[in-house]
Amino acid sequence: MSIGSCRKAFGEATFAAMLLACCANFTSGAAAQSSVSVKNLAYQVQGAKITIPSATLTGTALTDADLAALVAADNTTPLQDRLAKLDHGTLVIPEVDIEEIDVPPVSGEASETVKITVKDVSLADIEQGRIATVSASGANVNGQTRANKPISGTFGTMTAKGVNAGAYLRFLTEARKDPDEPLTTLIENFSDAGLKIEMGGEGAFSLGSIESGPIKARPFLLPYAELMRTLSRQLKVSNPEPAQLAATFKNIADLIESVEYGRVDLHDLSFDGTDNGKAIAVKLGHFAFGGLVAGRIDEYVYENLELRHGDDGYFKIGSFGIRGLDAKSTLDAFKKFAAAVPDDLKDLDVRSFLPTLDQFVIAGVDVDMVSTDHKGNLDHGDRIKMSLGRLELDGSHYILGAPTQLTAILDHFAMPLPSDSSQPGFQPLIDLGYERLDWSAKLDAAWDEATQILKIKELSANSADVGSYNATLTIENVGRDLFQGGVTDFMVAGLGATIKAADVKVVNDGIFERLLAKTVEDSHQTEAAVRKEWTSAVDMAISSVLSGHKNLPEILQAVESFIAHPKSLHLSATSDVGLGISDFYNAQDPSDILDKLELHLTANE
Image 1 (cartoon, one colour):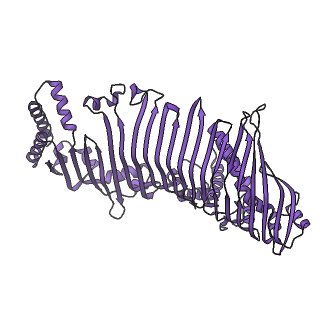
Image 2 (cartoon, one colour):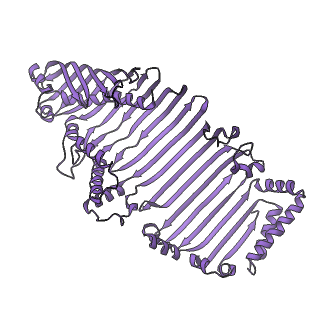
Image 3 (cartoon, one colour):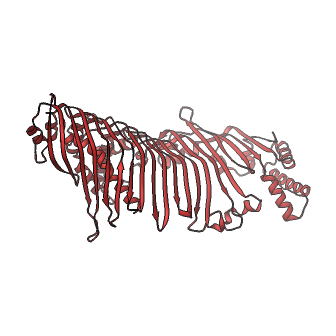
């Protein structure tokens, strides 16, 4: 069975948990001190056949006949009205059976069937369609796949608190009349003690536990089913007209703004199966969805993800996170477009539709896999092996989808280098005797609108046994049009910007010695001869560029000191008047630029 089939079986099983709320829609309780019961209930819900052999309602003034009439499948009285007659009761259902047959897409194929039996369902403290606690002791799953393979499994204890069955029914069946209707809590929290699903010997899925926070919603502007059908049609239209696009945007905005999810945590997910005769194992220690409110997702996190594919290898991720994904600007743009449909889309600024993101991070990556295209870094290209300590992007103070404050971090991207030249891109490092690459880098930039200064506070990189560099840059006269204007505005803003200061420090951690040794080997010269040759060549190049500059002697002395004892070089450049693009474009001679710069170079600080 494929992973897709596994997800299907899991979806069928999850329907059992959703039935707990649906049960409240069919039967709830009332205020009194007697007990009534009903037997042999049957319903069709969303393509599934649901049967309840018996149910008992305690603490009610209703008779058996009253209860039977309220829960009858052919009762045309709106369920909300029926629920309103039930108060202060507890409903106990020893067993609920759900059977769903998945009609195959191709004639002649077998159907996939799943039957779920939920045990010991209890709906406690029912009042005006609200249920304080819905619980079940567990559930069993049985069925067969299209390949006539058996499906079996179990669910642990399931509990839902604060279920508002009446509001849930409104959400599913009605369209709201007030566009600004507030959202109502449908369920306060839900938990499941875990599940296990076996799929005909082809795979097994398990989940340790689920905890979910509150779910809030309101009816959509169209009834739920109609909205889903409408969006399905709208999203399939290629090259839509502006009016069609406006209608689609309106429905998407309504879909997102009318539902809020609290935090969801899943623990200890695993799947074991086969693919082309090879064992597949997928494990996930923790998944967290930090909630969706007004188009903003606070957190979307995976932790301890591991995928193995037989002896082909493995792929591991310690953690993956998206935080602060905010689509408010997107929703506002959707609604603005729908309210005033433009005649032509060519003037549409698509940047106004871009969401913002506080953080993206992936850490603890470890890969050892077969390279199907034979372009790997091991075993003559047949295998890929690499690791990543951390990749992180942090953005804030957005303007039209562009962050004006940005931090990017790459921490310990590491990989062994090929022992041969199967990958030419690695050849220069291999020639220098490197067997492993371990690289880190960082960018930290911020724009201040009040001062119109853009600062590159850090642009750095380092590699083990190679060296490092760290640069800073200050640019003034950077206007807002650089971020929000059109192409012309962007070009004008760029022309007006001026570089005021730059600082670069380079530290040697072994690369110089390796280059020196390689040159000595290839040229058959002594180290002293090579150093002298390098010093002469660099002095000549710098003198030709900085001819006449007041700090030329200082700069030459620093370069000579570095070549003699290679530890570090530190270059500082400042300009009182600032250097813009036009200065470089109009310069007839290097001195036209250098006369505006204060340059200092020091070695081995």
